[in-house]
Image (cartoon, rainbow, N blue to C red; front, side):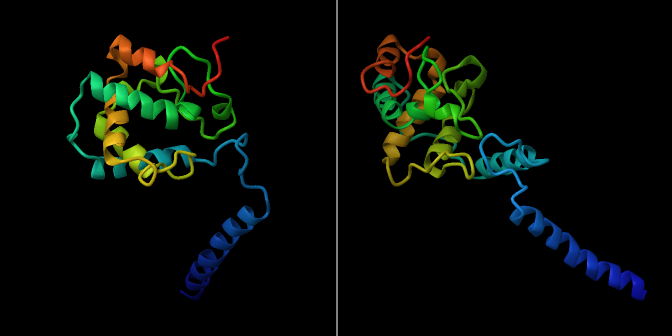
Length: 177
């Protein structure tokens, strides 16, 4: 029994000490070019998915119409395009140096139009830890956050006027190559 208790105590001391030693030794991945820690992506995605499912709004106080989408396009160009790009443009230079890479929201493989508006609203309002995605709760009004969320949720069927507004002046993405 003594050996068991001694082993338990050493395990409770040595394992945390080893983890701390690894982290402070400079060997842990910290640069954007470093590979992720084992299970880092799995744990982060599971935590984010659970939190959003628990807290995201299920309905919007704003109407999903052309006026809302136009206002959302303006919010997007001024606050989101720098990282998430705009339709038919190359990935922004800033996004190329981020880890994890911000999804290019108008590219077919990152179609946010599959997400409910409440999910996008939650991400815009709260941000996502350790990703570079900030919370916009202090920078945008609730109405603006809903406008951009509704515009993105309908990104695959936006009217021509909204598509034109997305590509208009003030866009921060690099030109197409």
